[in-house]
Length: 346
Image 1 (spheres, helix red, strand yellow):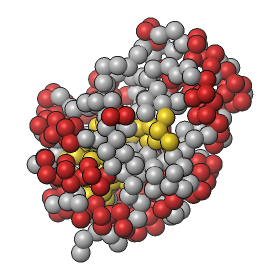
Image 2: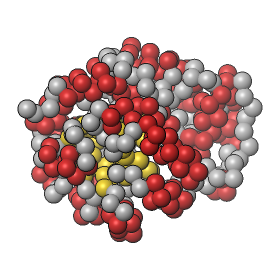
Image 3: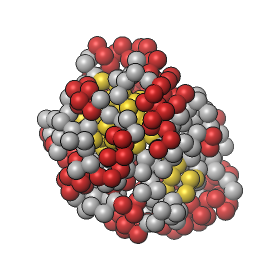
Image 4: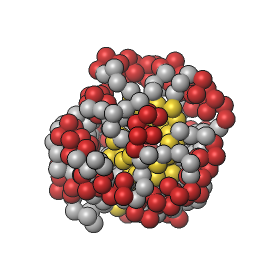
């Protein structure tokens, strides 16, 4: 299966960089791809022009395959016209003050439409498109495959993996509850879909017909070896790469990962309105204590105002990290990749 995945994705080793959304960087994506794995770049919130510019930067940095990642709409997203932002804005006032920024007024839109993003992705024609929060429809799958783009879906339960398999994706990431960042469940509430990596991966492998990529709690050679023992065809790693100098994480975020223990992450909706795993800080604690959290993506847009103004202050940032953060010890992406490669089957 490892050979199947490398052939499918056009890479040398079946190791993938987790897409980080706002924490993606061209340097890190290119480093993983240049090292023989699949670098990934998260396009959350990117409009068409920004996608085009980012892909141009990526192609200047590497000629190797890379993945672009998109969030599929789930249907429960709110628009500025759907919601009164005043209560959530008022609740966040101390955090705006702490960042030295005025409370914002409602934007024209919270997010660019998926159609705009897809048009830019089709023009860019990356080797791989990965998606989270849903099943790509027939139109998306046909458009990707006509252009020679492989599609990777992401599942947090066996049922989600089966749905992705039926849609014709080329590989499936089985994302265990240990993983950093957003819980990308789409068939049931994320709180009802918290399956650990060790339980999830072999059940997904048994249920689908395409290569399965294990994710969640993998940070060194031991995690990679375990993923293959469970039947996975590859491993996706996030937090270990997030700590490296090549990521877009702030120094404070890297220090938080370096100091984290196994019990130091929480699942919270505070920063985005959707459930995500990270290290709690002042922002998370104050938002949760206040009890007012706007629905997604309004909350993410609001907190993004003080996060951007805070200049990397870890007290006011989204400190995404997984439960294996204490195993993320490498400061350089190539060092991390070499450690992970040591766990591949020989």
